[in-house]
Length: 139
Image (cartoon, rainbow, N blue to C red):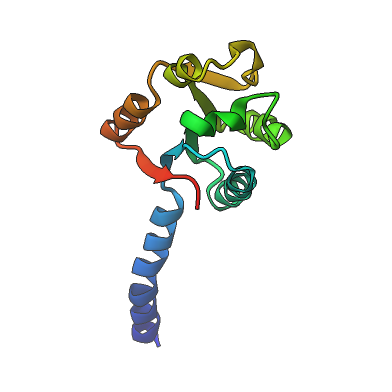
């Protein structure tokens, strides 16, 4: 009986340990958004919800540039309320200053929850160099 108990503990323990290690991971993800498509933006908000539920401590940054800046423009965004909600949960939204300049966007219309980087692509590369995972948002 003791041998059977010991054998079952030995067989179960590695799997229990793996489950504990897997759940303790700290994910750091940088997402690139270049699409101005409102369906992409709505889908992205659903993904954020699912990601936060699966990994509440995840670090997530969304870098918007090109047409993706529409997500952060108060006069264009169809998901501005969700951006505010997710920013309050720790998701970082970043606007590309090069895009603002090149597209002649009114900086005062960028949602207040957004931060800024000089060059979106360079910022994404720097995050990857720091060990962050990269995901391109969109269809």
